Length: 294
Length: 254
Image (cartoon, rainbow over all chains, first blue to last red; front, side):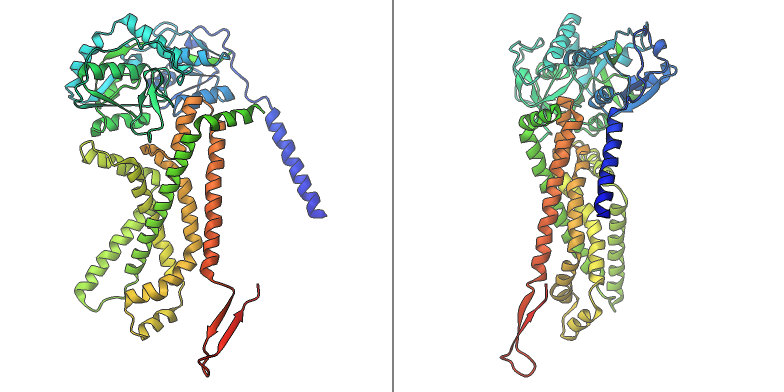
């Protein structure tokens, strides 16, 4: 009898505790209504991805901000939705994609070197990386020069639209396509995270010109801005394309080892990375913004 | 209620990937544990060889014991995740860009890691066998290897079975660290799924249930194997000291 009563008491106590925890208000949230530039972020808790320029900029250029770092963008988004952080740093295209998917989210329209972060073109531009001394750099630069600024913007908009429902065939042709015929020659092995919409993401079907991820046990396909650029480059080079999903931290090692020919992963050509690999000219330039909850 | 709908939605959309991941996890854990056990038994037999009288053989034996000790200490003393990165990328850098096939690399890493633990488990198992068993086997003319294979190991294996089951269960869970080299096991597939649906909590709740289902099934199956190895509770001893035709029926109380 005593045992039964103790058990009931313990169960009741843990239930009350759980309910209390569930109903508590949590952390005081930061109010974004009067924020016009990064100088107004004092007191906010902002997240960024580990190993990116976003994180360095956040740490060095803001005052009074609690910086939290996470391994990838899904975690940042989950942290934002669960209230752990008030917002997170991302490239503007990511903000388009995220806010299109979830109407509760919006973003601070920051402009680099104005209201936003101080950044050079190579800090926020993204480029293709090859092994140091690679002959591909010059050839890919020529190919990239052929894609106009308008096409880049339009392709990014297309990628953003597709990322909302990637497994459904949209029926619209991809904006960059090559007329070159594949001679079944060498293979261009390109690595990316496949977890960074709208630059590159994973999906379960080959809809909208997605490419099979070669190292995922044949379960997943990659698509997005980077994938379409990779397809275009491979076609113009007259090579077959293989896409590999790889952790952000292992991308450069993979190219140095020769496992992958190149990286097309929304990667910015920062000075530290230039020491490890060679970059082409940027194939997209964007602003760093902060995504937050309305 | 919305939570359960989301769970059902994830399962119905991604069940194939989840099952595929489960298959690879089970394959790597099973093969890794079995190969690890074989490594453990081999090192156990080799390490218990009595000291040779021949000086040359004695030196050879010392070198072998040293190599086994280094292997056990290094692979037991570093995390499997780190071993995976070092072996996978080390090979890629040395082999000029060729990589090990990821599943093969996963099997290899789990096998040698488990082997290091099993070496110690088997050593403990052999130590647990009464000295009289060794002496008896030697007395009827068995050499070291015969003693091990016919007398000591069959008893030792029964004794270490709970520890082997432990290793198997640990392996089912620890294969998840192989996602760092891109092995498409259950955790890797769950990670890929949550990058697509942005539902971290729901996805990993499903996966945790799947892991538990695997470990629970395995622990129950191995308990059955233990029982089978114990033999029946009632048995018949044929022949006694005075009468070769006697049958002694033994029945143990439950």
